[in-house]
Image (tube, rainbow, N blue to C red; front, side, top):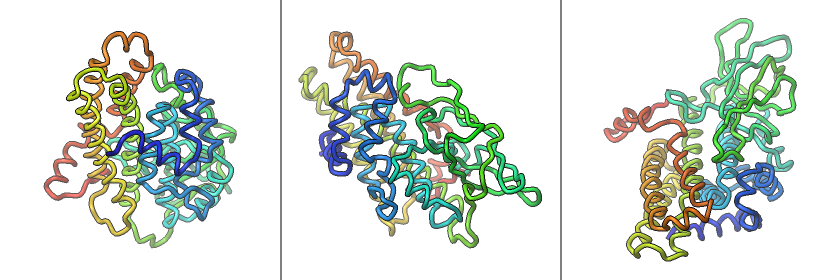
Length: 376
């Protein structure tokens, strides 16, 4: 059975002490003050979760990352969302490391060994865009690039050490090129503007990051290598698959906490309790199949299609399950335990992450007819 308990054990195996430290911290404090959860996460060494061992990281597999994210989501919802964006950024760099010319390896080393947080300025999940679709522009001026643009919402906006982003490189002559930049958050011209007004998941720091005439040296801008042997769309599909897997796991973790509460109290009927636990177990089994496909270098299936199908099915399962759980827990539990209403509200946010189901319905229909999903 793929229970929360098993996910917490995998988290303990991969990042010893992280789950226990978070569980020993007041839930309301974790959700009100972002520095608490992010500080615990940084100190545990978890910033290197998806960084390969050769770079000093933990080298977690997709399967392990799935369960670690679900486990964190069950304890600290905002941290799970913020960590997902960091880990997605790392996975994005992993996917381009062998195919771009640049300092990817140095960035990954720093993330793992110096405990750095990296925010995502990629176009993860935007309708009609792959994650490498430029979100910002950079024009060439002498020996550096001048970057302008913004990302909202951008998780880790106030705690990031580095910002990663896809950019359209506008040289003085020639056609625009796709590039990826990773820059220190302390560079002149980077500012943060309040954006996230909801009290739910506020500790994910999902505000607006603005880049205004930021001068980025050439060595921090990475471009596709000559004859990379893989298409940009294939790289984009890999990045979006990772994003979909991890963001879904974060919300499954939140819902799982409510299910666990129902099981602990014994409220409702055995049928209701089993149905709720079974729905989360089935969701995790579906996500595990996606993670195993990512981990298998010989797998040639449409991983992105499978990830999206699993994500949208998870959305439906979470809505049904959370509604049933709250009803069975009853009004007194809802009134006296603020975490119940908080988690019930937070779980609905999965449906708000792009790409929306409506934007992908034609592609999904095509996938059932044997056509690969296109994100461009």
